Image 1 (cartoon, protein in one colour):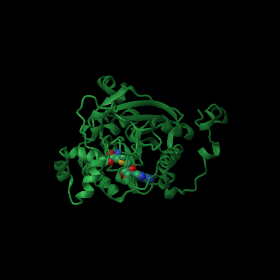
Image 2: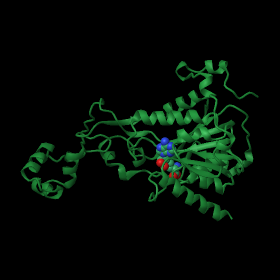
Image 3: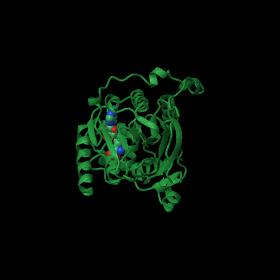
Image 4: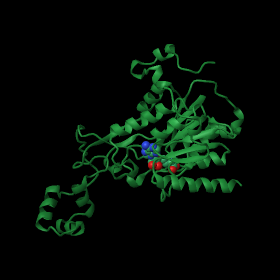
Length: 343
Ligand SMILES: C[S@@+](CC[C@H](N)C(=O)[O-])C[C@H]1O[C@@H](n2cnc3c(N)ncnc32)[C@H](O)[C@@H]1O
């Protein structure tokens, strides 16, 4: 069966998603010896290193990219840069995935997406006693007592330190009265468009229910918005023969998660060495469902190496890429640990 995208099925895509066949299958000038070696972690920009992955060699690529939520590793990244990064990385995947293989993207919607054009949400908290102290009162007091800290200002104005903070710094992290406005940015549609444009088809999507992030949720009491407690797992398929093996999971596992759209397991609770690790259970499930032992699994936003460790424990090969040397050093340590445990 031919797995190449033909002019015929390309023309059936919505016009906005059409690309030229040349763009999908552009010639590559990577020599045999230049291909990245499997079971290695590489430091570098995914866009520079993906063209060095052997074509049609990956059964699966599973990763969680920067979410555009202000993490340190996103410093200097504009929204347009972020879109360009993800769309390019997805595009570069198509030639690398085996026909019938999968690209799986774990991502969340952006809950605090800055939008200066958005009208202010002016919440009237009817169940709360509102403190009459205004931002102008506080600014006047600060001018009169420039050395007063928040605590002394609160005492002077007979209000709480929280009121001082809210009035000065914005009263909620999703866009308070004195802050820029933020809205929820749904990202799934964009990710799907980029994948379709690359030649993939959306095979499935699951929801991962994680720990509810109450600690970031001062706004929860001032709006109808929900706390942050789920992410998506989008599964994209490269046309080709996909082996279906019911024995990859036990009957109980099929019932509990293999055939279920909602996956529930805890987030990583200690992020002391990397700020945004996903739990090993996420790549573990994806790898068990979509690959066989010996297959090669890529993560090009490898971070601490979670996907590589899951792959090793499941007797798959891996390829890991991250552009941050501190994280690739950490990933290499974690990979070595996983390999030692197996011996
Ligand atoms: C959400 S984290 C992934 C965490 C990983 N799943 C784990 O469990 O540790 C995203 C990672 O992408 C990396 N990154 C950001 N931009 C990159 C780029 N252009 N190329 C490769 N890696 C990049 C960051 O350094 C960060 O480690």
